[in-house]
Length: 292
Length: 290
Image (cartoon, rainbow over all chains, first blue to last red; front, side, top):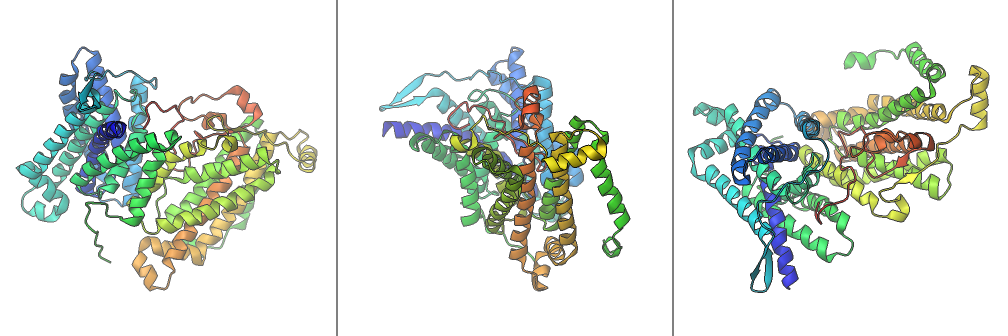
């Protein structure tokens, strides 16, 4: 039982990382009906930026917000330069463009920092806290705390501020928002910036666990896809719940199913396919209506 | 489109192209011939992908998985069961085609974006699935298969025509060329007849196509099957040819000179270029869930 609880907690910690990345996916999906295949690579790039800042003597807790701001700017830049010209293109074009973007960012990171895995120090100690017989790792708790704060901040921003309201309005009803004086195009850019910043959190949280290298996020992004799909790809809350569920499930599967090691990634694929076939709208999504 | 379709085929042009490709390896080095074989193999895979994405409008990012499947079927048959490698090509192609057809059934339910997501996940996950049965697939090491030598008849013919000995690189080039021409002819006919028109109609307007009596589900899965058939052929040829530089994936992009002569390793990290990518160079997982 103790082992089970510990696995659940560490599963929630990894799940929190997936949740951040999944939330980033959802933000962009909501903004323009597009799954951003480059989200993981953007997060990886942000982690490299944080790494560079820390290497130049900055403390992690200063580098963390600085990186988020830089990632925010980078996201807006990408939307303005790469995405805006093809905003109205069909899905195929958009998917290929984000895939190309992923390759580009990946290659760029490799060009700058190389493919040798680097050690990224964790800001949390590795001590354990005894909580009624269950030993909780401080790193896990730290990851859960930081991700939770960021997710809460995004929630407050989206639901309780004017910017959040215009952001949602621009995403859901671009024409009506435009009539009401919302700069829809810039709101989309803002969405990209926000997604990029939230994704950056997952990058910075994952880098101390995995080693930092350009291909770091390639597996994480699959879990994030699984989380986003499980939550219904348009629901921010669903992304968070989905992320936690995926994190716990693969953690438990890895521990209790013999020889599951490599196949954990296959669980991610399994979740994606099962959800898409059995319940395409996920846990929190609304059924899509289609005009024919 | 209309103009192209009604224009009479220019057979002389086809003949020129075929003769060019037939004669080409006799004037270039054996190494270049093998590079051109790679180009032909990728062309086959892309033809297949084009039928699926271009004609039927279904987005697959996981075609590398089908290629890998074709490659592994060929490699396992040739290596463990000592089947003649030429025979393994149709076996691999047909098996992959059937699997692709079956894969197309659940794909019917997915919107384009979700299909892209699912197939992308398939592409990333497939190396770890392939690695699993060590005895069968050789795990991370892959399977090392010897490059086939040209059969005596063909070799003798080549020698009488050009006066040089046919290398196995050149032989693989000709095998790839034969497959490419055959499959091109098939794709050409397919796209200009009923199935091709039906697929285009589905791509442009599914409801309208269904209203016009097109069997939407049937043609969509058919497109998946045919496309996988092409990918399987390409993968099979890919395994039989060799190009270690590409097989080794991103983790070590340099070619290994020994592999260049000894044959190709069909290997989990094997990256095919036809889909945007099948990623995940095989690296040891660092944490339990990476």
